[in-house]
Image 1: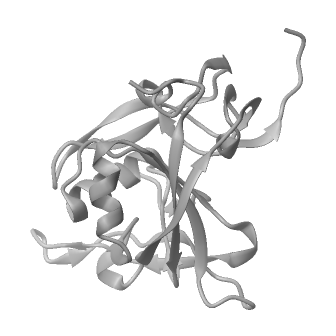
Image 2 (image 1 turned 120 degrees about the vertical axis):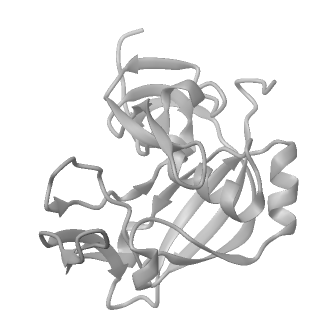
Amino acid sequence: MNDLNEITFIHLELTTPAIAIGERIKGGTFRPCIETIPTSTLKGSFRSYFGLTDALGIGFFRKETYERDIFTYAPFDAFLGTAKLPISLEYLRSASSKEAVEADIFIVKNDATEQLIRSLPTEISLGALKSRGFGRCKLRYIGEVKSKNKVGYLKGRLLEEEFRDFGITKIIKRRQGYLFYPISEVSGVYKKALFEGSIIEGPEILIKEEYRYDH
Protein backbone atom coordinates (compact mmCIF):
# COMPACT_ATOMS: atom_id res chain seq x y z
CA MET A 1 0.00 0.00 0.00
CA ASN A 2 1.18 3.51 -0.82
CA ASP A 3 2.19 5.89 1.96
CA LEU A 4 -0.45 8.61 1.52
CA ASN A 5 2.22 11.30 1.90
CA GLU A 6 4.74 9.70 -0.47
CA ILE A 7 2.87 9.01 -3.72
CA THR A 8 5.16 8.82 -6.74
CA PHE A 9 3.67 9.54 -10.15
CA ILE A 10 4.89 8.60 -13.61
CA HIS A 11 4.66 11.64 -15.89
CA LEU A 12 3.75 11.00 -19.53
CA GLU A 13 3.15 13.41 -22.38
CA LEU A 14 0.29 12.87 -24.81
CA THR A 15 -0.02 14.63 -28.18
CA THR A 16 -2.83 14.39 -30.73
CA PRO A 17 -4.11 16.41 -33.72
CA ALA A 18 -7.71 16.31 -32.43
CA ILE A 19 -9.59 14.53 -29.65
CA ALA A 20 -13.16 14.29 -28.36
CA ILE A 21 -13.80 13.14 -24.80
CA GLY A 22 -17.47 14.03 -24.53
CA GLU A 23 -19.96 14.21 -21.73
CA ARG A 24 -22.46 11.34 -21.88
CA ILE A 25 -25.88 12.97 -22.16
CA LYS A 26 -28.77 10.59 -22.72
CA GLY A 27 -30.81 11.57 -25.76
CA GLY A 28 -28.91 14.81 -26.31
CA THR A 29 -27.89 15.97 -29.79
CA PHE A 30 -25.04 18.17 -28.53
CA ARG A 31 -22.17 16.65 -26.61
CA PRO A 32 -19.70 19.04 -24.96
CA CYS A 33 -16.06 18.04 -24.68
CA ILE A 34 -14.28 18.06 -21.34
CA GLU A 35 -10.81 19.52 -20.91
CA THR A 36 -9.32 16.73 -18.85
CA ILE A 37 -8.78 12.98 -19.28
CA PRO A 38 -10.73 11.09 -16.59
CA THR A 39 -9.27 8.09 -14.83
CA SER A 40 -11.94 5.83 -16.34
CA THR A 41 -10.95 6.81 -19.90
CA LEU A 42 -7.31 5.96 -19.26
CA LYS A 43 -8.25 2.77 -17.43
CA GLY A 44 -9.95 1.41 -20.55
CA SER A 45 -7.05 2.44 -22.75
CA PHE A 46 -4.41 0.84 -20.50
CA ARG A 47 -6.38 -2.39 -20.55
CA SER A 48 -6.84 -2.38 -24.32
CA TYR A 49 -3.31 -1.43 -25.36
CA PHE A 50 -1.11 -2.77 -22.57
CA GLY A 51 -3.21 -5.45 -20.88
CA LEU A 52 -3.02 -3.61 -17.56
CA THR A 53 -5.86 -3.69 -15.05
CA ASP A 54 -4.11 -1.99 -12.12
CA ALA A 55 -2.73 1.17 -13.76
CA LEU A 56 -4.29 4.38 -12.43
CA GLY A 57 -3.82 7.58 -14.39
CA ILE A 58 -5.36 11.02 -14.84
CA GLY A 59 -4.72 13.60 -17.54
CA PHE A 60 -4.86 17.37 -18.09
CA PHE A 61 -4.77 19.12 -21.46
CA ARG A 62 -2.39 22.06 -21.71
CA LYS A 63 -4.65 25.09 -22.16
CA GLU A 64 -2.43 26.95 -24.63
CA THR A 65 -2.24 24.01 -27.07
CA TYR A 66 -5.88 23.60 -28.11
CA GLU A 67 -8.99 25.31 -29.44
CA ARG A 68 -12.58 24.08 -29.36
CA ASP A 69 -14.48 23.14 -32.50
CA ILE A 70 -17.70 21.33 -33.50
CA PHE A 71 -18.06 18.16 -35.57
CA THR A 72 -21.55 17.17 -36.76
CA TYR A 73 -22.39 13.68 -37.93
CA ALA A 74 -25.41 11.38 -38.32
CA PRO A 75 -24.99 7.94 -36.72
CA PHE A 76 -26.10 5.09 -38.99
CA ASP A 77 -28.64 2.52 -37.78
CA ALA A 78 -27.52 -0.74 -39.40
CA PHE A 79 -30.75 -2.54 -38.45
CA LEU A 80 -33.05 0.01 -40.09
CA GLY A 81 -30.61 1.00 -42.80
CA THR A 82 -31.10 4.71 -42.11
CA ALA A 83 -29.21 7.62 -40.57
CA LYS A 84 -30.30 8.86 -37.15
CA LEU A 85 -30.78 12.45 -36.02
CA PRO A 86 -27.51 14.41 -36.48
CA ILE A 87 -25.35 14.85 -33.40
CA SER A 88 -22.97 17.76 -32.82
CA LEU A 89 -19.85 16.79 -30.91
CA GLU A 90 -17.47 19.34 -29.46
CA TYR A 91 -13.80 18.43 -29.76
CA LEU A 92 -10.34 19.85 -29.14
CA ARG A 93 -8.01 20.58 -32.05
CA SER A 94 -4.53 22.00 -32.04
CA ALA A 95 -4.24 25.76 -31.61
CA SER A 96 -3.08 27.72 -34.65
CA SER A 97 0.32 28.22 -33.05
CA LYS A 98 0.76 24.53 -32.17
CA GLU A 99 1.31 21.32 -34.11
CA ALA A 100 -0.77 19.20 -31.74
CA VAL A 101 -3.01 19.21 -28.70
CA GLU A 102 -0.81 18.37 -25.70
CA ALA A 103 -1.66 16.80 -22.34
CA ASP A 104 0.11 15.76 -19.18
CA ILE A 105 -0.78 12.34 -17.82
CA PHE A 106 0.14 11.30 -14.29
CA ILE A 107 0.05 7.62 -13.36
CA VAL A 108 0.36 6.31 -9.82
CA LYS A 109 3.60 4.35 -9.71
CA ASN A 110 3.16 0.65 -8.96
CA ASP A 111 4.30 -2.70 -10.33
CA ALA A 112 2.07 -2.33 -13.41
CA THR A 113 3.68 0.95 -14.49
CA GLU A 114 7.06 -0.67 -15.14
CA GLN A 115 5.49 -2.66 -17.98
CA LEU A 116 3.85 0.50 -19.31
CA ILE A 117 7.12 2.45 -19.34
CA ARG A 118 8.87 -0.31 -21.28
CA SER A 119 6.19 0.00 -23.98
CA LEU A 120 6.88 3.71 -24.59
CA PRO A 121 6.97 5.65 -26.80
CA THR A 122 3.91 4.32 -28.55
CA GLU A 123 0.61 5.30 -30.17
CA ILE A 124 -2.86 4.78 -28.74
CA SER A 125 -6.39 6.05 -29.39
CA LEU A 126 -8.60 7.84 -26.87
CA GLY A 127 -12.09 9.26 -26.77
CA ALA A 128 -14.93 9.26 -29.26
CA LEU A 129 -15.09 8.88 -33.06
CA LYS A 130 -11.89 6.87 -33.37
CA SER A 131 -13.14 5.46 -36.68
CA ARG A 132 -13.25 9.01 -38.04
CA GLY A 133 -9.66 9.77 -37.11
CA PHE A 134 -10.15 11.47 -33.75
CA GLY A 135 -8.02 10.66 -30.72
CA ARG A 136 -4.96 9.22 -32.42
CA CYS A 137 -2.35 9.94 -29.77
CA LYS A 138 1.37 9.64 -29.27
CA LEU A 139 2.45 8.78 -25.75
CA ARG A 140 5.95 9.25 -24.36
CA TYR A 141 7.65 8.96 -20.99
CA ILE A 142 8.82 12.16 -19.24
CA GLY A 143 9.94 10.99 -15.79
CA GLU A 144 8.94 10.46 -12.17
CA VAL A 145 7.26 13.14 -10.07
CA LYS A 146 6.74 13.44 -6.32
CA SER A 147 4.14 16.00 -5.39
CA LYS A 148 3.63 17.84 -2.10
CA ASN A 149 0.18 17.80 -0.56
CA LYS A 150 -1.91 20.96 -0.49
CA VAL A 151 -5.56 21.96 -0.16
CA GLY A 152 -7.35 23.13 -3.27
CA TYR A 153 -9.79 22.58 -6.10
CA LEU A 154 -9.50 19.29 -7.97
CA LYS A 155 -8.75 19.89 -11.66
CA GLY A 156 -9.71 16.47 -13.06
CA ARG A 157 -12.15 13.60 -12.72
CA LEU A 158 -11.48 10.41 -10.81
CA LEU A 159 -13.58 7.60 -9.41
CA GLU A 160 -14.50 8.14 -5.78
CA GLU A 161 -13.15 4.68 -4.91
CA GLU A 162 -9.71 5.69 -6.24
CA PHE A 163 -9.09 8.83 -4.20
CA ARG A 164 -6.80 7.21 -1.61
CA ASP A 165 -4.73 5.53 -4.33
CA PHE A 166 -4.07 8.99 -5.79
CA GLY A 167 -2.79 10.26 -2.43
CA ILE A 168 -5.86 12.33 -1.55
CA THR A 169 -5.97 12.41 2.24
CA LYS A 170 -9.19 14.38 2.71
CA ILE A 171 -12.28 15.33 0.71
CA ILE A 172 -13.46 18.64 2.11
CA LYS A 173 -16.27 19.32 -0.36
CA ARG A 174 -17.55 17.00 -3.08
CA ARG A 175 -18.63 17.97 -6.56
CA GLN A 176 -19.98 14.62 -7.62
CA GLY A 177 -20.90 13.01 -10.90
CA TYR A 178 -20.64 9.66 -12.63
CA LEU A 179 -18.00 8.21 -14.93
CA PHE A 180 -18.49 5.35 -17.35
CA TYR A 181 -16.18 2.57 -16.17
CA PRO A 182 -15.30 -0.14 -18.72
CA ILE A 183 -15.57 -3.74 -17.54
CA SER A 184 -14.96 -5.31 -20.96
CA GLU A 185 -14.32 -4.29 -24.56
CA VAL A 186 -18.04 -3.73 -25.18
CA SER A 187 -19.66 -2.90 -21.83
CA GLY A 188 -19.28 -0.95 -18.63
CA VAL A 189 -21.05 0.59 -15.66
CA TYR A 190 -21.45 4.08 -14.23
CA LYS A 191 -19.61 4.77 -10.97
CA LYS A 192 -19.59 7.72 -8.58
CA ALA A 193 -16.77 10.14 -9.22
CA LEU A 194 -15.21 13.35 -7.94
CA PHE A 195 -15.43 16.10 -10.56
CA GLU A 196 -13.54 19.33 -11.15
CA GLY A 197 -14.18 21.83 -8.40
CA SER A 198 -14.21 19.32 -5.54
CA ILE A 199 -12.14 20.66 -2.64
CA ILE A 200 -9.51 18.15 -1.55
CA GLU A 201 -6.29 17.74 0.37
CA GLY A 202 -3.91 15.87 -1.87
CA PRO A 203 -0.98 15.99 -4.32
CA GLU A 204 -0.31 19.38 -5.86
CA ILE A 205 -0.45 17.97 -9.39
CA LEU A 206 -4.18 17.32 -8.88
CA ILE A 207 -4.88 20.88 -7.70
CA LYS A 208 -6.01 23.65 -10.04
CA GLU A 209 -6.19 26.43 -7.47
CA GLU A 210 -5.30 26.56 -3.79
CA TYR A 211 -8.12 26.82 -1.28
CA ARG A 212 -7.60 28.44 2.10
CA TYR A 213 -9.94 27.74 4.97
CA ASP A 214 -10.01 27.68 8.73
CA HIS A 215 -8.88 24.29 10.02
